[in-house]
Length: 201
Image (cartoon, rainbow, N blue to C red):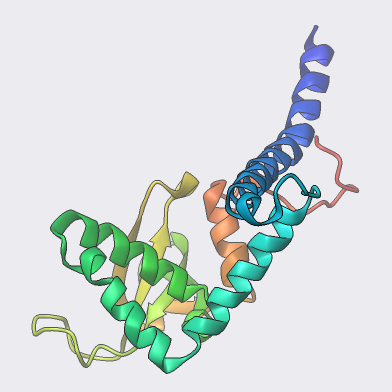
């Protein structure tokens, strides 16, 4: 019985990530197919080929990316964002999501950041975090003086995190990408490198 449980657990952790990924892709494809069919049906009637929704979705995203690259369009987009940036509760949610998306955008600040190990003097504790800020000239009075950095400490399963402002000598950069660090934090660093050919012990 114990072996059956072990085999079932191994099969589950093997199939679950693939199944969830395929399920999310299926939901996205089904949504784009329905939306495209609803938009194009008045123009093309009953003529429709499977996959047109995905192609249309990609083309629409490319078109939006091209348009927002134009200064005039970005200026108009700022007016469209006014309801989202002025309503009290909506403003907090929208601003947080937009800042997070901008951080991971190709022109965002991700390339300026680094993954570090935070060590406090006199403690053997090591915490992996992301340096998110190095310049504090625009912050209000009250912060300690000296060369400091802002380090974001993500919590497991993305239930939150902490941002701490520490002296620069407390952090040590490590050879790890931001995506890898966030992915490892998401699963509480339970993933291990496949030292035995990828076999689960």
